[in-house]
Image (tube, rainbow, N blue to C red; front, side, top):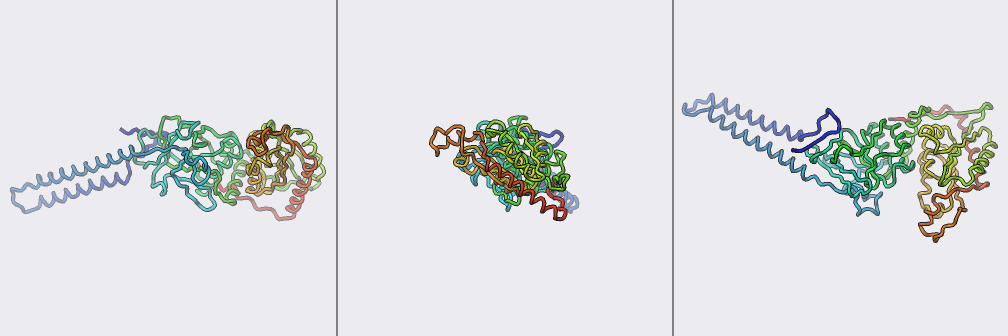
Length: 476
């Protein structure tokens, strides 16, 4: 007997294909109708009295009834064989380990993405591409993605012992993780974009993978951001049994932002900003025009500090420089904030009230997401990043550009606390320098005054313009 369980009480799991069920009933109906016609003609026929119409009619009926039952048994046999033939493949295909994030991804490698203009690549189940089949997953391993598996199955012939998951499920596989703020946003942005295009649909649950390895949670910052956008966040840990787990509807993202167009990314970031502000009780439209008691525009400059790796070697000196330069510009207000001390909503509030953020390189700069468009960013790096970090050091340049913000200046410290003991070209040198502390340059940091002046001029120009239209960012 096939065991089919459902995770939501009170709802029935799918049984046989409706089309098959209706076909069988139609055949039986036709047989019965045919029998009645024969019976009618037999009863009224002027045949010889030795001919028994009732006997002949019952013979017809029993013959056709046997055929109908035989057809039903054949259908059951075929469904049973389909169940047994469902083939599970490894979630992580090591043949594509060198192209894990490109076209031939190692996650669900046998399936081709749906490509739409301006959108991130995705898989959707059930769909025409999957021939109406549902996505099924067997997954408990958190260390080896090759030991987790997936398959496609028709709703009427799900594998034995299936746990059927009602509603829409978001399935993510990220090459990075769900803790670092920048990586988190890159992994989740495609789901937000897909939802925007599809009537703002919300997931019933999330299934998270990293290299095909199951993850049972996401970082608190990301969970708060997704809760702001989608409501309650339930991360599925597959704890209700060995499975497999088959999903009524599932959307799979495995390339992070992938091919998502620049305009679509901007729309996604606008929506996330708007939703986060609403979630935290902050005006979704931002601060609007602010002036001091002398009628001068207020420019809010925030020093977003770090502890430990990539923190400033001399934080006091850095604060003194920015305080001095801010004081030279009318309307400038400086705020110094320690990023690790802030809750999610604290971060949203601080950045929503910031025109210029200056900070060492790090995930905390992802909070620029909550600043108004056209805000400014200044970023500072330890020694070794310019020469060895590659394109990853420009992540916040890209984010600023995609959010319609201005990356106004980056400074790379030429001096380290120690020199790398390996040859300069050795990749080990970047590991050596990666989490070093950041010094300061009096001349370059004093240039913060120029950035403040640019923002002041921009705000003065805005003051002469008509009242801006309200944003339509919160479309969901």
